[in-house]
Image 1: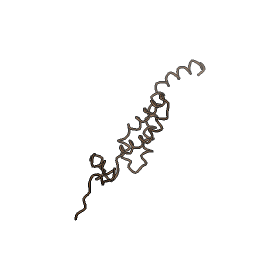
Image 2: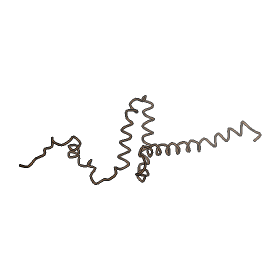
Image 3: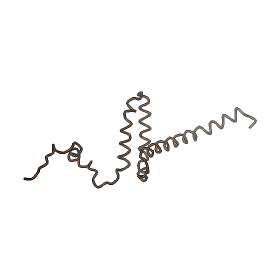
Image 4: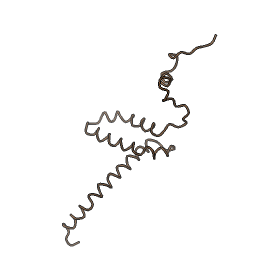
Length: 119
């Protein structure tokens, strides 16, 4: 007599993979950075839900910044994906600050000349 295995005998995870074969991790030794990133961002959703509505909008913009450098972060499979997400956010924020400084610097320079005529 041979043993048979039915769908209901499988674990829920195995059932899920059978129903959604594109989720089968077979053939991949390392999950992609994008998958790691989405998992990290999903973990942060409880924090997002606890924020005020105005802060949620800001949080969403920060999350968007983390996604902007996923391709570069993919080259660093040996690093912690959370660190790479934060580094991506910091990079985008630094670019934003540089743009602000660039547009404000000439204005502040003119104001200093008016307030300090001896310069």
